[in-house]
Image (cartoon, rainbow, N blue to C red; front, side, top):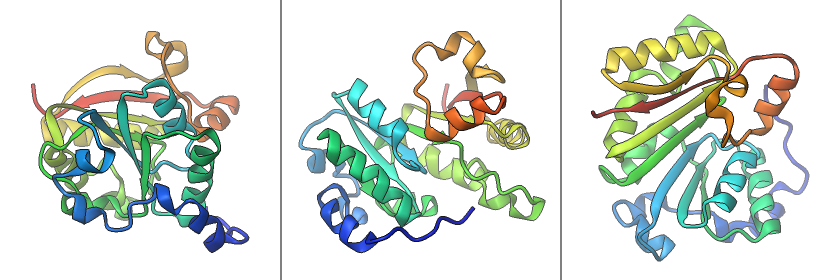
Length: 214
């Protein structure tokens, strides 16, 4: 669903500009310098309106968070939440996931989150899904050896497709559940805005943790 352009978008974005990384590729291999510490770096691809990453950063002040979002109108809402709560361990990038290897060095990221990614329902759109094998190759490249990918979705066909891609790629899976909210893995779960909406409509939430190396 295409979002209507937000009123005063450019002005609102400018007010939050301190939270954005204008030239992310210039920080490749040096992201710890940007944050000014050696803390772990977690990346959310498709942060939406920011509920997940804002709460994650509040619970984990000793972790550096990078939020990636292609939609400018959505990323503004997320940044405004961060500014309102004065959270200091999040930065934002308005980039495409396919370009992440140009932005991060090998083994630079500790964890990646994919939350309720676009399912791209048509078969001919499979290569655009963020769990397609070409994207998995990117994640493996930028993740540390013990790094993880955490994937959540309400879309069962997408989840099944993703499990197939993970198997094809030779990954190692843990914490696999087809009903997160009624599982033992829900205790520390942070819900996204989509997750609350879908769950309220009766949709079950699928989740898995992916390791690319044993």
